[in-house]
Amino acid sequence: MNIRNITTCFLLLSSAVTGLKAQQADLVLLNGKVITLQHKGDRSQAVAIKGGNIIAVGTNAAIKKYIGTHTQTVQLNGQTVIPGFNDVHQHPAPVYAFEEPYATLELDTVSSMKNLISLLKRKAAITPKGMLIRGVGYNETQLGGQPIRDSLDKASTEHPIIISHVSGHLSAANSFLMNINGIDESTKDPAGGAFERYKGSDKPDGICKEAAAGYLHHSKNIQYPPQPTPEQEMAGYRLYFNKVLASGLTSIGDAWTTPEKVGVYRKLVAEGFPMRFNLIIGFDYLDQVLSGKIPQMNTDYLRISTIKVFHGNSLSGKTCWLYQPYDMINPITGKKDYYGIPPARSQAGLDSLFFTIHHAGWQIACHSNGDREIDMVISAIENAQKIDPRPDPRHRIEHCSLTNQGILDHIKKDGIIPVFHCYMYELGEKMQVYGPERISMLHPTKTAMDMGIIYALHSDAPISPYPAMIRLGSAVTRKTKEGVVIGANQRIDAEDAIKAYTYGGAYTTFEENKKGKIQSGQFADLVVLDADPTAINPDKIRDIKVNMTLVGGKIVYKR
Image 1 (tube, one colour):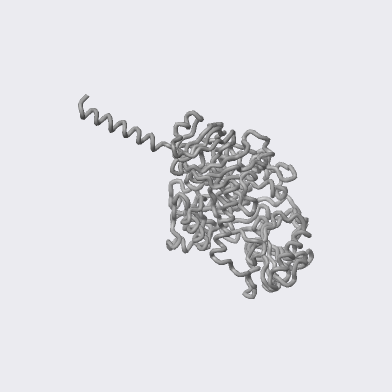
Image 2 (cartoon, rainbow, N blue to C red):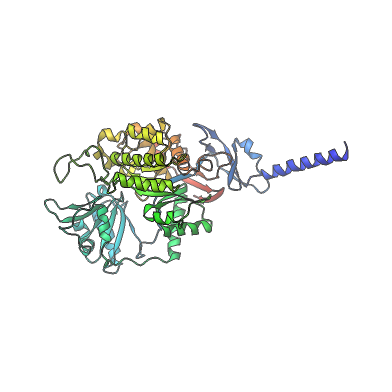
């Protein structure tokens, strides 16, 4: 062999060695039960990670070759590994201590009217007189009735009090707040809203539905709590998102992002916070989007490409608009003649708004619950696409609750993404007012899956809690806390639910080639569980513990 051939062989060998070294992993997970989602039922034992991405998935023997001198190795000892959960629709808010004047009370676990009044009294005792007290997430079923002004007045008559319903679509106010805003017998119901009134009277009882809740902020004499400093706010957001990571979520969508919150997320990403954020800009700020003040962005940790629109009302708040009346007695008429509250926006107005967003190249994410509302949304999407055809725009219907076969046929034909709720555990008892026929097509996950429709699941937190295993269990069992199944025909198995809450979320944000499965080339966003959701009693899924969360190949939470 001549010198030239020897040199060539040496260079080839050197290159091969270099290539081998390049494949030495930063982190290897061994001896696990890896649910890859590459196809139904696919399981592996180990995962190799380098540079934030998965470089190999396979047997222990196959993956051990990626272990080098500097490789960190984690022995899973049979624990289950799945892709990181992707909650594409929630409403993040900073977490503050109860004593802080700007802290909003979390009411979702308050179990009686007596306890609600007691909690509000405690807050009033440390709040300056005249300053607004706020709470979110009350559930009238747990309280034993709506917290009308008479009840809230027992907490304080010296503070304005406003608490929002678990649906987020109605608010309750005490007399102080009603009076300061001039809401009385002469106040008319606004378009798209209604004031509940005492039986046999025109006097509002403090429960303000949909657009009517906006009247609770009209007065310039309301004394709002002081704003937290920027440092306090950022600390509150870090606390919130660290809790989110501990629950198994690695990606979230903020479903009403303001320009100010865009700044918060930019700071979090700049400081290297290990969460992937998809920002859905509220349509109130559409002018800033169209002017370029809020530009589109698509990086590994921050995506801004979607506009949130409201067209329709609340499912659990019983205000969404239906073709057929609710299966309940209308307290005003004594008959079954209540259809919900019609949206304030006309079809022409919706068509115009959707076309503006669509033509500008943004994705639409439209809140809509009732079948009559959803049909309007689909029509507006089809109109925009007809005038200005775009390949695969993936416009979204958020919640997409009360459907029928015709609605799903259009969703499939148009490539629309339904983003379904999975909150039957907490709020399923409120669904009975829709009757058995509509319940059979309520959040129709099984029918949609059988039709080949790709969909995502979400918490809508704080409407329902964000911990991923609670949401996953609810999607599988569709049981209320009392054990009542809501829409048994729409139950899906645990692996399909995991796929919807991971790959489905990634597909919704055009990121299915980056995340949502455990395969080579995807982000190493993973969750390690103490039990296999696909192999245990479905009723026990919600009790599974998250033992470890990884984002970009880094362990960001460990129990």
